[in-house]
Image (cartoon, rainbow, N blue to C red; front, side, top):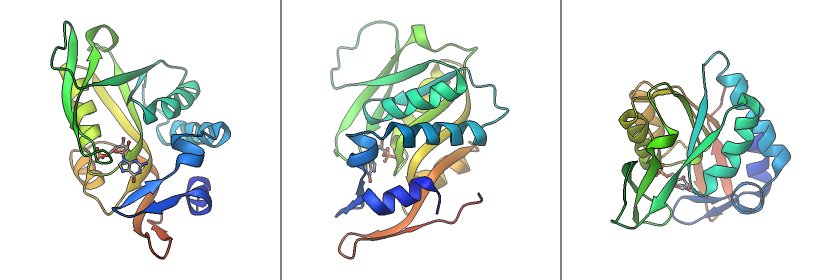
Length: 195
Ligand code: 5GP
């Protein structure tokens, strides 16, 4: 097990409905040393990629993206969630269905902060069905920018998102890939990864 998998086993809470809560170290209280280590690992996995910007989605992706950005020495842009249909002006938008909340949001990024010269690393906390990632990819395409890769903290490998995104040809790196989890027994299995 790697350092993130070990922490999930120690402090993650498995909820009914295929939800893994990581509130004590990632999503509510944040363990900065752990997330900094995740940043270093993403830097290693995307070595050689000409990343000049990181894109994530509010809210829980932001903190992780900021620490990853320190390792790349680049800025972070986060897509804002808006339920308003009165989105004015110069923004790229995409529709994203939330796995955890079950609602739909329009996410938007100002055209000022993404442009055709950008080489983007997408960062997010979880990958489930891939809706959030597809929204971010759509926004990057609208801007004419390049997706250099996608870094995820926890992929739920038993849901469809990872397969969809890899089949689209993107380099998707997930630090922990959950193959299965059982809320009643409190057990979790990870997909073995090359170290
Ligand atoms: P997707 O769009 O891939 O279906 O879901 C990704 C988003 O849903 C992530 O940004 C994350 O916020 C949330 N999410 C999905 N599954 C889980 C989960 O098991 N636990 C937590 N904490 N968030 C999740």
